[in-house]
Image 1 (cartoon, one colour):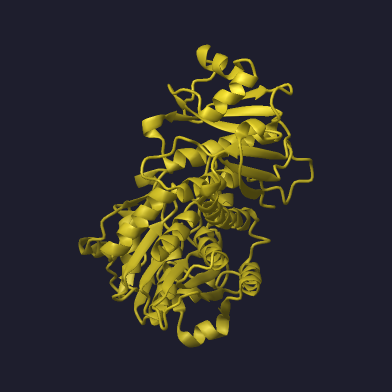
Image 2 (cartoon, one colour):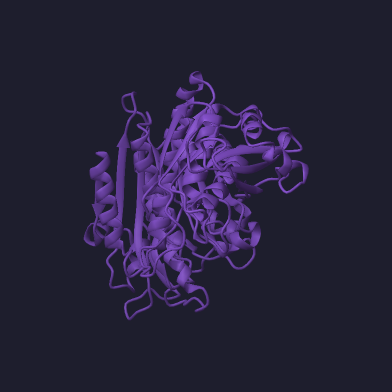
Amino acid sequence: MKIMRVDTRAGRAETESTEVLVLTHCEGGVLSKQATVIDKSMGGALRELLQTKEFEGKANELALVHTHGKVPAKRILLVGLGKEKEVTVDQLRQAMGHAVKRVRQVKAGFFTVAVPSVTPQGSSSVEVAQAMAEGAILGSYQFTAYRSDSVSGKEVKGMSLLAGETSAVRSIVEGVRRGVATAEAAVLVRDLCNHPSNVMTPARIASEAKAIAKEQSLTLKILEQKEMEKLGMGALLGVARGSHEPPKFIILEYNGSKKKDERPVVLVGKTITFDTGGISLKPAENMEHMKADMTGGAEVLASIRAAARLKLPLHLISILPVAENMPGGRAMKPGDVVTTLSGKTVEVQNTDAEGRLILADALAYATRYKPAALIDIATLTGACVVALGQFAIGMFGTDTGVKESVRKAGVRAGERVWEMPLWDEYFEQLRSDVADMRNIGGRGGGMITAALFLSKFVGDCPWVHLDIASTDWSERERAYVPKGPSGIGTRLLIQYLIDRTL
């Protein structure tokens, strides 16, 4: 998808010549100074909307007014933020997501948004601008690569953020810079996950990594099957056995740190390009969603690109264990035992619990870098969906500081996490009669036993695991989240990286 352009300038809304001028308004509040001047020129049209309660300023409420030449803007779009005391950064993000959809409906190519005079308590102008840029770009997302018919609505090509004071422009420009980079990353993830699995194969993931490495001058290493065999990645290779698509093990490295020998942050993402469940075959219903079982890998790939584009002063490594999980004559079978890179053995009692197997080898490999923080992100368990629904990411970890930093980044990004227990008592469910452990622990606490399984491969590294099985796919379109692959988790990771540099 082509990303809309976002620019920033100082100016007055009443003199702005644009196809659509977006003004925000809080429920129960009075018109802003900018809106009051425009309302006067329009003979009280905006105030009349409030008086008749056609528009009240409720969260995400919209009202479009044609100006008929009374002001330079062709249309005024009022967007509600809800009650002033309840306005959050994510509400601004949602408002822009709804606004850009309305702009597209009226077939406008460009629009201008006056930076709100009412902002969330404690938020900076950088955060406000970042959220607004993210909301607009993500709200305009459409995936049309395989559509032969014309797509309804005109493409929105650009948005301008209008600052009331010249002194505010600098911080708003920085916010937009961050917002564009994070939104571009989420769009990349959505695109990668929307492509069908006959296109987005392990080889194609490797090609995408090569393109990003070349564009951003990143260091790239791709391990092929023979190299994985020499290293002893029995878990990853076991998952890949049933497929004709050879696995890949991708390592991307970015070093923008100003400190010599700084320990890296290492991100690991589950990258199953399609998950049939293997011999433990999934039900046919909704199996097509499994093209997005590579979301975690796409997110760590997009995150390192964003870090490089933002020139963040840190050392970052992204690791993608890539495979396709298929049934076949050579496929791994229930009861098979695999030896992982760490030397630990695993009895595979369910081949559909494959994500934790490929992550076991990837996490063990990641510990070789002695990371300052090790974060894995994965569409790991259906149990996460049952426990948390679609609005929270499941979080586990061994380091209080990293967990708290991830939690705060999630709040800022509007991609919140909820911590679950990582207690050793649950490991009883993973004990095997024939190996060091088995890869499933029964129905009870499925999300917890999966995370506990992973914890056995991270050594003493400060580690956090994020289960995004609950959030990676949306059944309906929301403000800035499309139906289908959502990319949720991407901006959380990038915000975490940004916060480490502040």
